[in-house]
Image 1 (cartoon, helix red, strand yellow):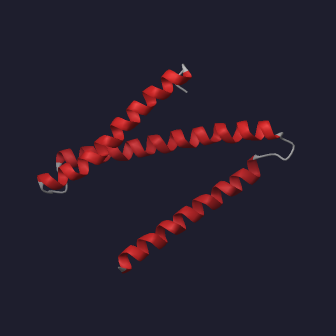
Image 2 (cartoon, rainbow, N blue to C red; image 1 turned 90 degrees about the vertical axis):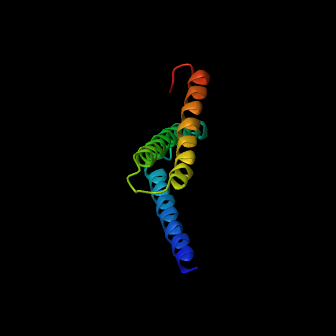
Length: 110
């Protein structure tokens, strides 16, 4: 039980630090003379950039997990390797499918 509490506390600290960093970035980057429309556009573009970067990071973690599980570097059982490979493969597939959907909506892939 203490392990679960430790994990929850650790993740809460990480999320709080990330939220604090984003709050500071907002305060430093959003000028006060911007109109509401300019502010919304600025935040929307920045949010898209961060979501794209997060998607690439998540995809790279999933690909690494697939490679490690395929090569059986941990000498795990077949059942365990399949159990870890399926979610990683699902992440890769859903990411690729969502990229194709966004490219068709935008028309330019951005």
